[in-house]
Length: 232
Image 1 (cartoon, rainbow, N blue to C red):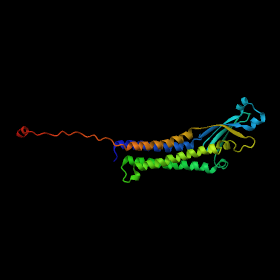
Image 2 (cartoon, one colour):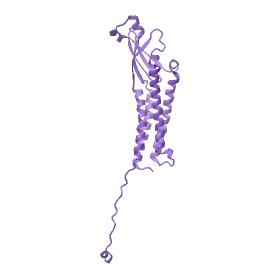
Image 3 (tube, one colour):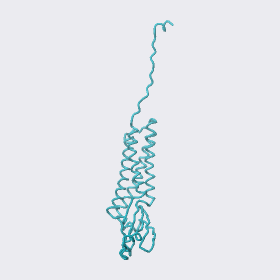
Image 4 (tube, helix red, strand yellow):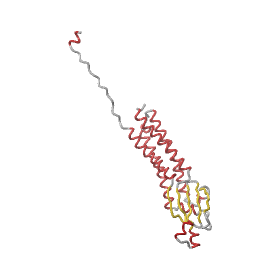
């Protein structure tokens, strides 16, 4: 059985790994990966709007990996519409990259559970195989954190290099063309960053758990026997 010191740190490692699992589920479910401002370029060109009038043509958009919402502002008031990524919109995007992001996050879910199991195993017993010990915990956390980081990088690439927001904003728009004027990452994106950070923190936790505690030795006084004691 591991000592109380290691049990405490392995318990913390299991909590962090399972927290990462929960965070990824939340990030997948909440449609707030990115938000932005979209300008109705067609409306601006039609009325030859001045800089002060541009605000009347700026709408909002936010979306996640499965659905989102946009508010069109084309001079006649805001019109809100909901949209889903699957099954039609994904065909207009870089479908391969989008599906890759989803698969990476699903893989990260599995790896987070495995790392949780390894931490619990080390908390309740000392594994007889080295690969199941602290090295195994580090390995699965590196894999899980790396996969989440790769998913985050892929999403950023889709936004920056494939104009993801603009493609979504102009989906099924026949009369108006929208231009993205502002973008910012939202809570679901940062939740994924927190998930990857949890696995990085686990590496530190496992390293701390391997610090040997100083042994407390009790000093035993040696009894001295004198000649008087023998006579007594």
